[in-house]
Amino acid sequence: MRIAVVGNGPSALGKGADIDACDFVVRTGQFKKVFKKGSAGKCMDAWAWPGYAKNNNLVPKQRHFAIWVTCPWKWHKGAHRKQNVSRIAITRKLGVRAIPLERYLLVRHWVRHFSDRGKDLPPTTGLLAIAMAVRMEPESLLLCGFDAGKPYADGRAFSTGLHDYYAERKMLEALNRGVWLGDSCDIEIDWRTE
Image 1 (cartoon, rainbow, N blue to C red):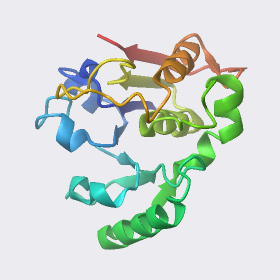
Image 2: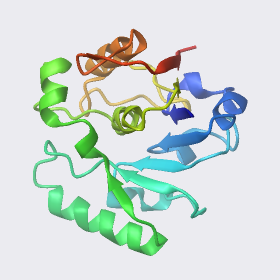
Image 3: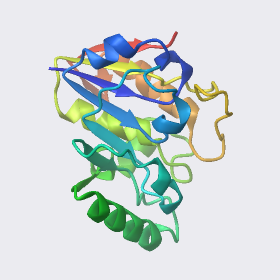
């Protein structure tokens, strides 16, 4: 199986045919807002969603996909209850079951292996989606739109105060070399950064 995980960075632009050719496609966060229709493909089997109530308008209209929810995360102090209520309400409204992603990249793994600031800054929704995809043990993994340090594909600047993008880049570089959380990983990685 070949899985595509599509982040919101500019390297996903123009890769629609390669993305849609995969057996399973995961789109992250604000993809509807970031990409013009079809500019990064159209297929979607799972949506990795941060679970915030303010993102309700970003919920895709199609219903044939899984929702992978990244919140609540232990770092979001005081937000657990509010975000959990939002997650439950939205998934009930859609009539789908949400899969919480935080179990696929534990806090201790993030802090120990990658982030000096990990106790304060959580990994991105996209990185958690990659963690879930790795756990699915595909033959190959296509990563597009993961351009740590670059603006979103629609030109908006990313926020340096929300996530540790340097640590995320280190983690993806290790995965590209065949190492995941300190262990060898036999998945063929196709990480598109251009």
